[in-house]
Image (cartoon, rainbow, N blue to C red; front, side, top):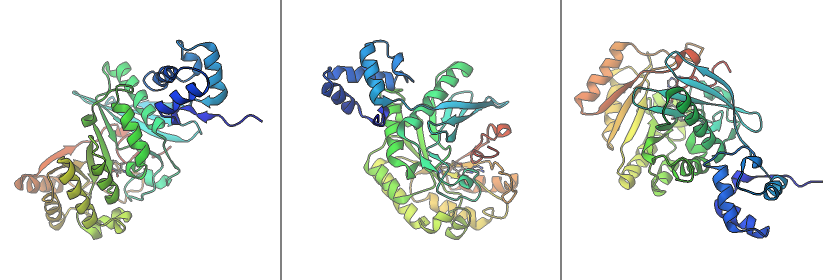
Length: 346
Ligand code: SAH
């Protein structure tokens, strides 16, 4: 019986070089193949035209190249593109391309489903099925970069980890993917153009600080009052705000980098004066800015975007305290591609 073929992209460059040396070839062959696998995103050994046929056959006997496929693609009136991405085992995740005047952003997934249970998010209903591998994350970026060039005539400029899943619950693969995205052997993108968005896992925020990561951190806060936050993001019971605060102070201490707080204001949930006051207090801990995100309804109507008046109340109070606040209008709503809508209707 043939032994099971290994996923060649699980190998580091060094391991690939070793493989060739062990098979009587030159280590340099490893570099060539590595380049095909990553910067040239080859889907088949036969694509590797500067590698001999014999070597390609030998690779084919030992390895597979797992790759993703764009299963369906939907284009919104505003230019947003939502992709259902099929993984090698048939599972589906979603990745979105968001164009604006000045940039095109890829919103990528880090897990199939999600292990957290935010009440307002469509992905939470899927439960977590598995983590994505580093190459599956990287490939989403490559696919969106292609679409950006094709439909918007320029390359991808930014990446946000705001698709399906909690990136800090799949830390190693996310970091490996980012390494590849930023490396000249991958896409050569600048780390400062990448933002990781987390619900806030304190231990992992500290780990990121220790690892001296160079990308940006966003935290989905939505409330700075434990009781309220736990009611909409139940894992807050395990990771309460005081632990989050402490981890963010640690982050700032080590990295000197500002954090972005993502925040949706909902009717009757966090639209009171005391909610605003709590946020202002939370913002005093480290340098930060607040993104007020428009709510994208997921079918059941339990959550409703607060009124314009409530939103303006937030804005004026934050500004009064010199806190930078942006309002993020949602994009791609007509195709369920907006934040928290991934997994709606699919
Ligand atoms: N797990 C990560 C990344 C995925 S969610 C995180 O929590 O940050 C990406 C962003 O979309 C988060 O800020 C999340 O709170 C927000 N979000 C989730 N559901 C939403 C919805 N229905 N409308 C608007 N934003 C939503």
